[in-house]
Length: 593
View 1 (cartoon, rainbow, N blue to C red):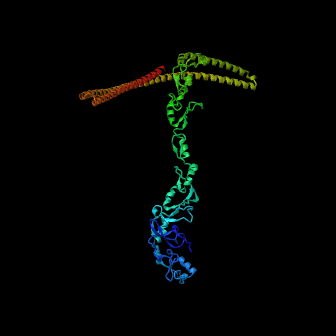
View 2: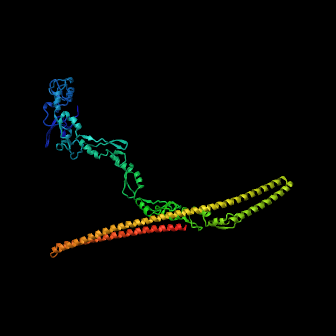
View 3: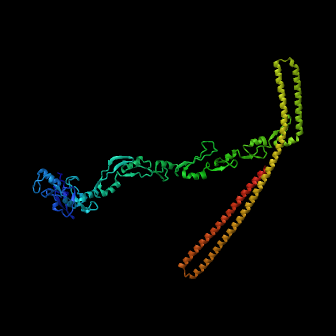
């Protein structure tokens, strides 16, 4: 036998259909044999009540005598007494048959949803789960706290399984990233409150709010993830620029471009070989770095060497110009030629006409020494004396040769008395004497060839110098003509500009005169309308003040335009004067050469 359940509203624990009045609602019929089953009015008919338990029949069974009982009550009666509880007629287990018609009637009864009830507050001295707890039909909360549905008894179980007011367990599983825990949320609430509960449930899986982070887990682990493990926590700029980056890695990248971080200038002067001073030591915020390098830093500002066209730092421009190998300067020997530093020594050794050199015939006795520029004239004028010296040297060589030959013949005569070793020594001496004679003859031949070559080289140098002077003269004549054309064009443009501004000034003067006439006209009208002061006088003063302000503004504009014209003309004159001075300097340099 099923254990009797407590009836709703505190009824005695007997299996019977109870009539329970509800204040303000009416009477309902509570089945004590069924858990939280309440039938709605009207009251179920008596033939649907079990004669044994006085409750609505559960699985109706009918005896041969015609009495109907619950299946459980019929089984208990047969087991205990073997008779019908109503008429005491003998029945056996096989005599009870299901009554489908009664089951159909019972299924059509109207019943309240089981979730139309709510628990009353515990009385003084009672806990919420004490036996004294009571349930009541909360009809005032239908549609809000409790379900107000009345359904067919056959549909009651299905309705309760789907009822929005049924008690459910949240049941969400805790999760931390890829790890799934076994702990579940045990919170109980009505189905209608489940969504609201899960808005704040600690077990709800949420993605990390940091952009770029792929972590997702229960809300209870979100804070620890953000504080300890998340690599994408927004990081504010440590230098105060206000930028917020998405991760520590992004913060490191931002640091490389942060506009307010202090950074060294770092500009390098390649001309400075000292590692301690070749780099700019200035430190500033990154957003001021461009201005520093453009306007202040002598390491970053550059200039082009006019000689070698190399880009150098401004601080080293003078030092580089003084040591530049391509820089041209006047020959130190005083010839007036401008040569580069790297070609200076070659110029002094081979080309400079002011360097004193010896005559090429000094080996044969010429004692002349003078500038290279006059050496060609000396060679032309002293050809006869040079030939005489060469002839004299030849005679001396011949005499020496004859003396050597005589010595040789003497040696030959005496050769018979020489040993083999002495003969070999004599042969070596004779060979050396012959080689010396050959070298002397070759030297004389080379001196003659050098004389002819020097003469030809002098002629070529003179022709090249004449051609260079002619080309330079043509170039500067063309430059002078271009400058004259530019001056004429600028004068024409200035005259046109001057005429245009004169017209504008005339127009402004006409406007001022027209305004003055209008003021006089208004003054006449106002004096006509004037009647002892008042509003008209006030308007007249206001108008006059406005006219004065406008006139002062126009005069100021005229003066401004005049100053602008004067400044532009002075700039044009200064520019032309600088060009003329530069051209004069170039012409003087050419003439010096």
